[in-house]
Amino acid sequence: MSEKILCSVVVPVYNEELVIQETYKRLKAVMDGLNEPYELIFVNDGSRDATAKIARTICDSDKHVKFIDFSRNFGHQIAITAGMDYSAGDTIVVIDADLQDPPEIIPEMIGKWHEGYDVVFGKRIKRQGETFFKKLTAKIFYRFLKSMTEVDIPVDTGDFRLIDRKVCDALKAVNERSRYVRGIISWLGFKQAGVEFVREKRFAGETKYPLKKMLKFAFDAITSFSYKPLKLASYAGVTISAASFLYLLVVIYQGLFTNTTITGWASTLAVSLFFNGIILIILGIVGEYIGRIYDEVKGRPLYIVRDALNFDRDRALGR
Image (cartoon, rainbow, N blue to C red; front, top):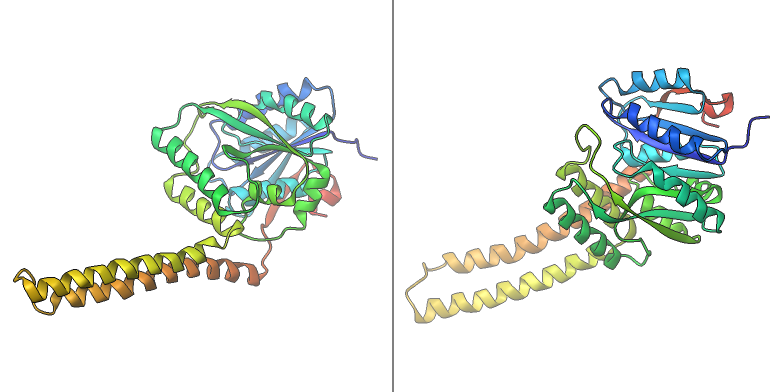
């Protein structure tokens, strides 16, 4: 019979050859200090550098370390999901490999779990090494998301968190493709608490979330938990219509009482702006939701595993 595991630590990695060894050392030091059975699960999300090779070497030397190798890049949230699917611990901790979220907080999270909390999330009270733009947009996004949904998603939190086994099992029943894991966990309910920490500078390498990916992530989060944007399309349409109508009045006034307009041009432009503004806004928002529906109905698996190391046979086969 296999050893009962207190904590599974899930670490998604993508092109992290410069940091994965240090991540392993710090995680191992923290987890060894607990004097409890544990496992470290590195999930390689289609890295194109030496990340997978280094992770395999670590697996060979330490049986506490497990490795899941995707067939290609499926995305950060999917990598987190796979790590949870393969985990065996009574608790599961998700932490990124860049060491911005300090592993030394994990014992405090486990302490909260012993107090009876099912979800313990890391709450950032300060973000070091990030630009003013990144801090500002993150602050605005979290508060905007909170205002758009009825789900109580804690602000200033990332995926760094601990969840109980029963939360993980409930999460497995949620199969949506465009995943916002921290939002889904909040949607599940359960008793939650936060642990405050200072987010550190990235240990090495470059961020895997440039502006383009951050915007996509934000759209996924909003469309996963709110249909208010569809209502906002109507409100925007009304606003543009009203503004265009007022502009039409100005154009009519200019045409009748001044010589500042070219006959027919301004009124045609106003009418064109009126209809095109409404149509494009509504089509764009509706398109976001239709695209999500399209992804869901295809019914493809969330991820494909090329290889799984140091798991028992059933878990290696994804059972």
